[in-house]
Image (cartoon, rainbow, N blue to C red; front, side, top):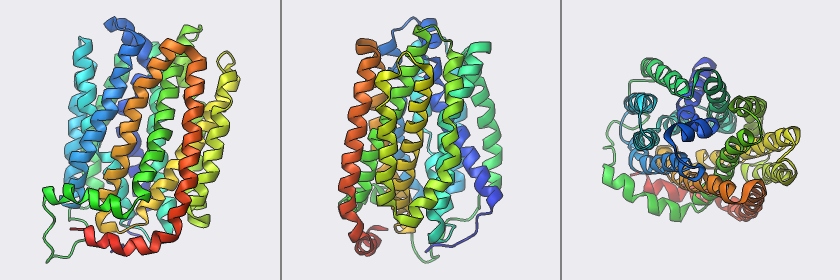
Length: 407
């Protein structure tokens, strides 16, 4: 049962900011691919394995660990996972070989669970009519972390060396280990005292029946797998392309500063989804994303045109994610963590594959290759979103069937 309006605006801001800091850890590598590859003596395609394995490990961690959020107190889980990130970031900052760096990055991905526990935690504590708005704010935090890591990573790498970005991440995780437990409730989320929490094996077994009864959730995951994959592939290609064309890694950071403007639009995207329906809103934002990638073939040697393309793609992609999550969070709150598991696992499998594919495509086909790849992704995202409209009339009917899988 939803328990509305228990999250203050201050706490909501702190949760969004915490999500930004936690998410940023996995993306410092994007503006730093060139100096890291040079220090460890590996190729562009090989360094692309680092973010790829990070995303795949993240998907595995979410599959195996995130469902625990429906059984174990979220405050305890968040503290453990943030502490795990602290250790992984410390290993990356100290690593003396590519193997150790890549291994620590994969461990980092496996324990990056907090940004996906927190939205489920928050949306249980707001009125149903505010879910889109709150989801927009939490997603803005994630987007801020992903893009902010490029700003911070690029600038820190340029002026202080690439390891400095990871030392900043270590400090942030140490702070969050103290902050998050202090602002989260000690009690277990709203569950009747006479109801035994489902066993871990039951949580995992319930994922497939939930997917069958709610096809719009895995469909949303597929859409986001492509959208997030496009985002990661493009930024990895930018991290390789700009330094090879006379720009420093700090330029990647400056480009990310401009792209961060879409963070401020995320809450409005959530309100728009609340107003006209998330399925319809997703179509409009797909158009924005497609418009952005359509500029890429002409932006390889034009930094200003690349800025416009990145802004359109970032706004469209982040808003598509908000719409898909709003659809997900409108479902039964007692299984919301498992719905998030399905969505995020699919999303990060696509992100992991696309991270490697983007770096490899640029390595072998240059900027024209990455442009064609991006356009193909965006067209497919639009087609899947149009197909998703067919599930809208069944939303209320599906709501009741989901309750059968809460245990």
